[in-house]
Length: 254
Image (cartoon, rainbow, N blue to C red; front, top):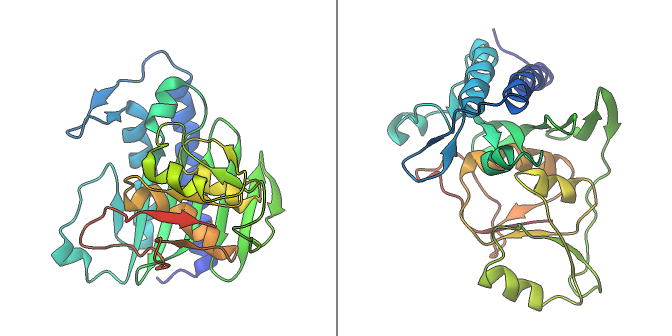
C-alpha cells in the first residue's frame, strides 16, 4: 500500500521515539560497548540498537533505507531509487560517549534527491524536531507541540550575527568566514542540533567547512527547508542526496 506523506512522517516520528528510548537505556547504563570503525570513528551498542529499531519501523513502508550503520547499497542500484530513507541512528557518538546529551537520532525521507520529511530527536533533552515539505517545522518537548516560525532572511553586514560553530571544527575556513562578519557571536552545539539552532531562530547561520556525510544532514535539512531556510554550498547550490559519493560538499545553513 502507498502511504501519504503525513503517514510516513508519523512512522518516522514513532521510529525515532522508539529508538531514542532504547538509546537512553544504554546511555544510562555503565557499558556503551565502544568499538572503533575503519575510519577510527567510535561505534557503540546504541548506534547498533538504534539502527535495528528504526529499520524495524521503516521497513513496513517498502521504501529502501540508507543508514550509516547498515549495509551501503551500491550506487548502481541506489540511483534508481526515487524515494529512500536516510538514517543516522546516533548522530554525535562522541557527544554520547562524553555524556553531554548533545546527540540526536536522525531520519529523513528523500524524494528525487530532495529531503521532504525530517525527524531529529534529542533523547536526553526530551525534544523531537520534525518538518514536512510545504507544511512547516515543529518542535515537540516532552509531548508538547509547538510550530516553529519561518526562518527569516538576515543581512550579512548586520552587527552581532549569531553564528553556530562546532567546538571541534573551528578550522581556518570557518575562522576566515567569521572574520568577514561584523562582531559575530559564536554559539556552540553538538550533532545536528547545530541546524536546530537556526531552525529555532537561536542562530542566524551555520557555516560548515568540514566533512559531513549525507546521513549527518538529511533530516535536519528537511526541517530547515520546511521552514523556508537554505542548506547550500558557498556557491549557492542546494545540497542533494543519494549521490554517487555520499560525502557532502561544504555548506551553509541559514
